[in-house]
Image (cartoon, rainbow, N blue to C red):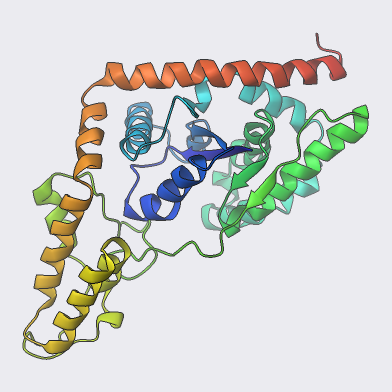
Length: 325
């Protein structure tokens, strides 16, 4: 089964991205019979990020994170969307099969339009779902893991693909299925809201130790005195700790909270130390790739060659039925 995942290059991956998307996707790619196609959606990021140097840095950080967590590039594929021209070529073809009302009714577009105001809404933001459809259909993806907020975009992709298939009386495109894991956890940020780059409440596990500790010490907590017992289930530090610790470690910290004489500062220090030990290998690999651009480029260029081979086959089918070859 071919699985496709796209990661927008709008920032460095944080703990929420790692636990909620990266680790589950890698585990899925490791299952027998599965083949994973992972692209870094740098073209999509242009709708919100205009600075080129920042985008390049985010692209490198995303690639380094996936490699640090063991993404197998021999079995699977990783590439930069912008380096495979077939993405934008197919997007134009799909534009011509996409009704305007479909795009106007896209929930994500309406939400972002309301926040930005009509004068700040670009055509790129409006046609975002079409490029996303091209990303998926270009690689004959069977399964696309997405969050609940992206379900509509997969439905739009299927509708557009079905329209093309119907027009030419053949299976030009594979119709993808969404994989929406209802069990995927919402990772709390240091303020208790969902961890997000846009909220500025995230934990970057790859930061230098001192900087990482400064962030962890900012985790919101109540004013219960050190000597009094505390409710671990109401504390953000404990919630974060329990997401990455072993059952034994979680049980011990719970006992510490409930016994009293154990402060939130103690818990934050344990969380900090756990991150450093649990992700020691990943932090080392991340630093290696971020400091060895030639090695990172080698992996991405090889992935782009693999992706381009598949993309050209699909574009060949499309050009044939549409009369462009």
